[in-house]
Length: 506
Ligand SMILES: [Zn+2]
Image (cartoon, rainbow, N blue to C red; front, side):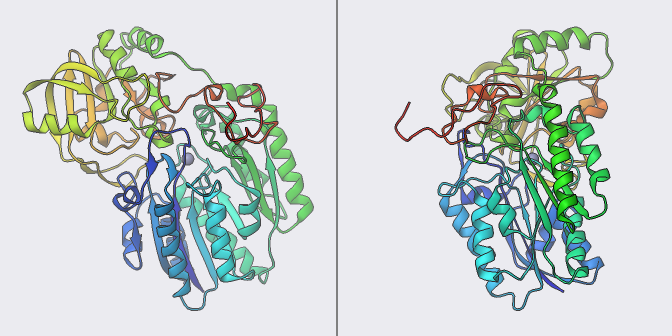
């Protein structure tokens, strides 16, 4: 079988400070840089990415994968029209020149919003479907944070989503898409029976983690729901900081028996709804979190992790807020280290000074968020690095990082690790690159909501989620939604969305 393979991944936080420009996709950073044609396979090989898993599974079956393009950028605000049109254009162009095709596989996120399209994936799928016609199967893998829309359900042949957050099963999900294509072929190209259910409340990012309850048991149950007549069951926790009509959690089920598919979808939706209160989660202020961690650290021989979730660059934060860092410095948290602070100017200054030198720095807050100021400190340059290293933890496994000039600054008893590209603190190699072994720190401040858990939870005494000021509020009531559908609860058991607000209204 000849199967076109492409990928276009962006998680759009419509409240975030900066848009995703074409350059953010071409340079990659935490993701492989944009690639097209044969180079695409080399660029994604060996990385925990859905497309890499699909290509591997396709070759094992003797299928011929044909490369379209693969592009991903760090989550941020809207994807610019230029970026969307260019990358979608590469995909469509590749399809037009691919010759006869038996199937298409697309590695998408599911929560992409562009300047012109609320449902970025729906728009891409519409164009692909228009080109291919109704008979060629389009298999799509999605992120667990997909805001799945009815259009995506209709346009794709089948959708299959990650079951882990941290997303350690991305490549595995690509393989599961190949398995669905097997079934499609076995049944002579008959379409799947499908069911789509939208849940009536938004889930805060930090409590969608599949390592903690209630999400853990729900995700663990999915395998056992794939009974006779049901091929694939996904629970998408959704991506809340997206001001679009179809934001929120969904259940998507595909199979061969409509009644069985519907029954499983209804049962899973009911199980999720029954856990609504437990999805509210537990959060501390930065001041309370640091004080708590200091108290705990004195009796522990493993680090206390403070997750700086509201500035998570994996959810649209710029990675440059300094609320938690300032609190660590103010409370003189001995043996504490915070990473990664996005500040190319400070990294450059540290490289100019050189390791061992001291200087006056104005750290972070470069993105101009209202109410945020740089942290002015005297610091010693403890280490510098070129930002190039390979990740070894389960989330970023194999990713070849290229974060530009990096530096570790020592402020009193606190270390801060600085990078020239924004990426979430999801791998211990980010610390080791600058000569710090994270397991030996007393307190670790990490700019991440959940992905850090894959590599850091095993070495942590305890994980505390803190809410220092930042663009990714844990409490959705702090977000000025204007496009959400009505009747959706903004937080678990919280108040209802007021529905779409007319343009010009306040
Ligand atoms: Zn995700």
